[in-house]
Image (cartoon, rainbow, N blue to C red):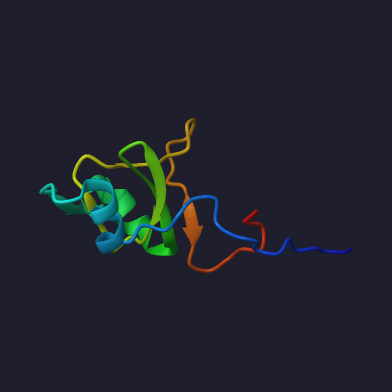
Length: 99
């Protein structure tokens, strides 16, 4: 049996950084921030601990954000269409990630 791992080339979405991205996206406009945990159900709050980053739609753009980040309050967590599960990068890679 042979196993080949695809090297991690880069992320398909940028990583959200509060300071830089807020200034670029909103300028001097006052923006209310909420913790990502506030966008999740109670069950998802327990599951999110296994993720290093999850996908969050901020405005019309998708970002990877840390589960401890704060995002603008009109943001949405990106979920898989059929099952509704969170999409992201696990803290401990399983060897099958494509990125």
